Length: 80
Image: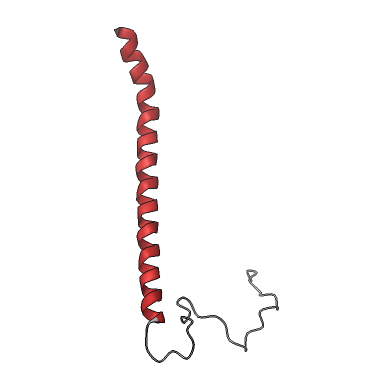
């Protein structure tokens, strides 16, 4: 019976860390699923708005640079 407690005390930290990892990953995946569902709902609402010239939904997200920005030019991000 003493051996059983020794084995359990040796395995307990690994099982505990594994459980914490599983709970953290489960929370991340659930949050991602909810975020994707919310984004899909927003995209459907935007696509369903009247007055759209084409059947395609407008882009939802950060603005893209306009023609006055040269995207092929290297950016100077070196510290001065």
